[in-house]
Amino acid sequence: MAGSRTHVPSDSGTRWRLHVNGSHHPDNTAPPTKTPASAERFALWAPASLFVLVALIHLHQNWTANLNPWFGGGFGMFSTTDRPWPQSLSLEAEDAAGKRYLVEWIPEWSDHTERDKLGAQPNAKALSVTAGYALNSRRSPNAGAVRQLLVTLDKAKLLDRLTLREDAATLSKIEVVRAQSSDDASSDLGLVHARARAWRLGFDTKSARFRTEAIGEPGEASRQP
Amino acid sequence: MIAGSAVTVFVEDLIAEPRGRTALRLTAVFLLATSHVLFAWHPASVFAAALGVMMLLSPRLLESRWTWAGVFAVLVWGLVTRWPVTENNRYLDAYWVLACCLASGLTADECDRVLARNGRLLIGLTFTLAATQKALRGGYFDGSFMHGLVLWDERFRSVASLLGGLDAKDLAINSQLKSALGFMPWAVESVSFVTSERLRLGTFVLGYLVLLLEASVGLSFLLPGPRWLTRWRHYLLFLFVLPTYLLAQVSHFGLILTIMGFAQCPTEQRRLRLAYLLVFVFVCFADMTAPMLIAATVGA
Image 1: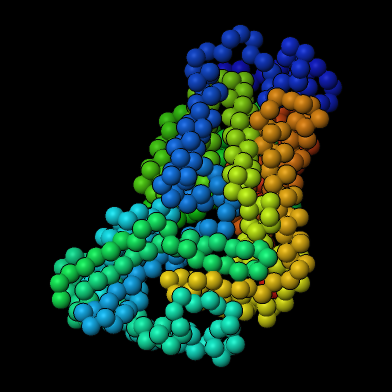
Image 2: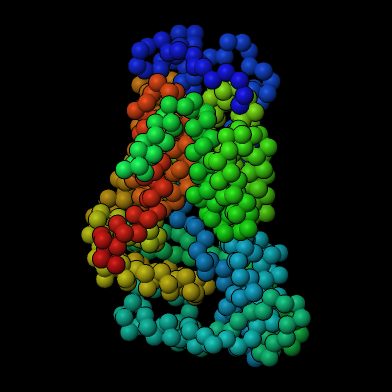
């Protein structure tokens, strides 16, 4: 930024009011005395051009590839209730006897980056990889968490506010287990099938009701018992 | 006493010096103040914060294109590696740092012009695109977005209390229902939150006001005229920044908007420049005041 630090004087005593071809200059700046050099021209337009380019790519991703509008350069934050929340991804598994499990997320993913990426832009392939990890799940100290949650809601008389996809008695039997991210991790649960899904949140203002809806196809993984 | 006069001298200096240079200094402060947010405490945040300190101490580094290029490279690296999970405003940070990089190698007048133009275009594009996305998705027209946001997002509990009359018990029930939905979205098809007719109506009106304000800010910065709109652009931006960042607690976005707005104020507009500096300081502290405000309002 070497060079002159003098200012082009304004044409009014107290307010800066410049006129270019009879109109107020939108940048509130003195017009250059000569045509801007190419470096300046580039500097004047490059950041905004990059903005438009990235926004177009991410808008395309928003509308065609499930990129959540809260993320990316499309500036769709606060435009939809569908913001990924920490548990917007679910993992379920079952053993050869048909017993069902809810799989806790992989604790080794400590920075949650991979999980967050899946939540922000889920796709069946990445979900299938995650479902594969779920097949190696082990028992968790939170085994009875689903039943405990339903009991708590029932005691607080809040169960009536929930519309469940299955009855509460069936859900209470689902045990919580914990996934392991290591490929060579072993499991003593004998799980044969796992499914990973990402969920979208919707809201109806008349009934003040939030609803969940699966995004795209689930990711699945299976193995022989 | 000495500290007070030192602050006065510092503020006078910021108000009197060319706007491009002040905008660069404020951006260095921004890097220092928000590096933990920019990179979520990644080691790169230390690098950005260190560069921010060095730029504030050394005028040569502040005006060095290479220093700004270094910051831009780190920001781009962060965006590329975490691109789907990077919120919108981080992209704006990178575009503005690119503008600083390109402006810092030019003469003072050119630097002023480049930062003023980029600040205007970036604010205009951001708000126009944001308002367009809101309008296209429809949640602002039927009131569902704002109503759902206030019920779901705990940052807006004070709005639910003040606007909708929900008490601490109602908010606790909603929090419990949110936990249930979050814990097993595969099992819960829907859940009915506690609300009030007042909140429904209030958020409906609020949604329209937000949409109108965002569109006005966007167009007033982006368009060269009409004069009746563009002359109010700075005040419209203040009207957006002040309440928004007190409630939403995303001060880094407010700070970058304030710097970009400041870059358009020549030295003659002392009051406007001072107003921007005051807003900058206000937004810096907004993250700290908002939780206190929420606690005081809802008694949490």
